[in-house]
Amino acid sequence: QVQLVETGGGLVQPGGSLRLSCAASGFTFSRHALNWYRQAPGKERELVASISNTGRTLDYADSVKGRFTISRDNAKSTVYLQMNSLKPDDTAVYYCNVQIWSASLGTVDYWGQGTQVTVSS
Image: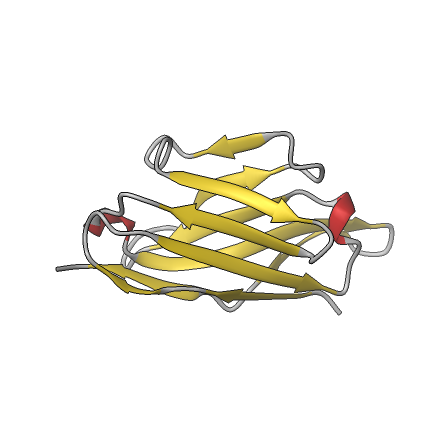
């Protein structure tokens, strides 16, 4: 079955950096775009960054452009989110996401368990 396991969250001071990883299994990783979302307390889940299956197309939320970088290693079935110049507003649970289509189920969203990122002095 599809599994997404995020790691790398933690507590960091404003201006600091973290690198999140999402290890995927249960599907053909190299054929699918991957996404990072985040959800802060009391707020809706928002899309932070996306990467195409080849890694050539990247998209970012305006709030993280220039600070976050999404990348992937298809040989390791892993997607990364490098987060620099972190701000308290970046505090949230970060989720890895993949949308997979099948003839039997249609398009299904799969999510990891999330990893907490806290930016505080």
